[in-house]
Image 1: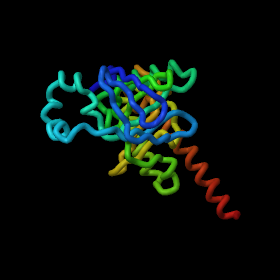
Image 2: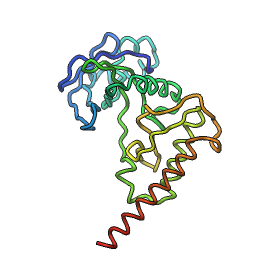
Image 3: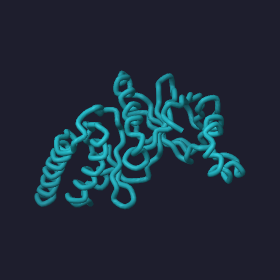
Length: 225
């Protein structure tokens, strides 16, 4: 399934339902993840056991995936509603997911399609099981942080994408120490693909400088307490 499929969400209260093409997809459980905006984690109703058993075979048939796309969604997805007056950023995020299609699921979430939720466009994305760098900010060494950020942003750079929303909450560390990037609303496309010349490389350095200053201030505060 690619990001071109249109999903239509039916109602605003859990259990949530949305349409993927002509098919209805039902969420058995919904959790609001961000009180400042509409971002839900949805646990989807699973397909019948027989369908689950034959999925590896039927997934090789594009026409079956097009006819019954709900069979091929993961058990948990993220529903992300467009912010008010962020039309340009919303379109930019969709473009970024298409440009970065080959690193979906590795460096960025999978993009399953676009929905309409509460009258506004919405993205359906994969759920990433990890912790934000904000949660880990006191535990990770400077080298681990820098290496994780550089690897993730170097991957974006190789596709000509500049990432400018350098907040700790926008980076997740998953098993094995890999860093993944979320919230692609504030990106620039078609930029340099050379890491040494990129804004991404400079942003990592600026990010680390600010983090080190905050750590020093926190340490002084604890010592002075």
